[in-house]
Image 1 (cartoon, helix red, strand yellow):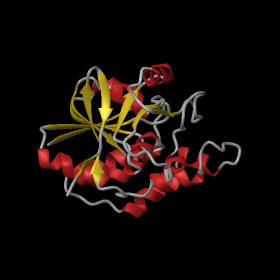
Image 2 (spheres, rainbow, N blue to C red):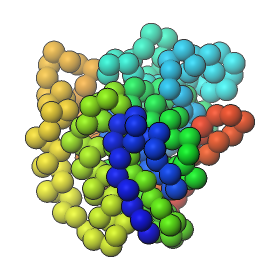
Image 3 (tube, rainbow, N blue to C red):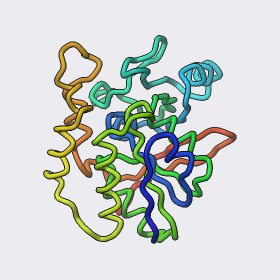
Length: 230
């Protein structure tokens, strides 16, 4: 199994084979929480306007996401796992748009298989891919707004690579590396209330969920669904 690590929008565009698009703070942690709260599927789009149009067309029940970390006007939820912790999403189709994670997923057009990656689904994602034994795995750390590398996504990429190769990183050491990173500081900044401190804690709860999040292309849309693993 050859494993390639890439970053940002270019990394997503160049990804090939089985591809994991990573967004730890916060898109794909939020997606995992949505599935844990009962969501049936998540439609991934790059732009806010597309998300709103799809909801208007009845493709999904609600929109969640962010622009510059803030919930867009007319969206139902922001890009916060903490905000979804007690929301009942049973049977709902969610439309998600963020400036990093969903942009990366839509840009990975050359991927043969596509997965959403974060720490909370790390082990399940690794098990799923190891069972398939693909020749090539591309892991892409999307960073801040798809333009600036971020410690949490880069560390998650390395964590997944090590696990795929049969090594077990120290979760506490990985958390500490992420916590001293630039992006992590937003979650303790009272001037940026859209970044809940609890979001950071939830995003660093490694292996919280026992499902991977594969993405399929359904009628021209990117659709994510949870896939439980043993």
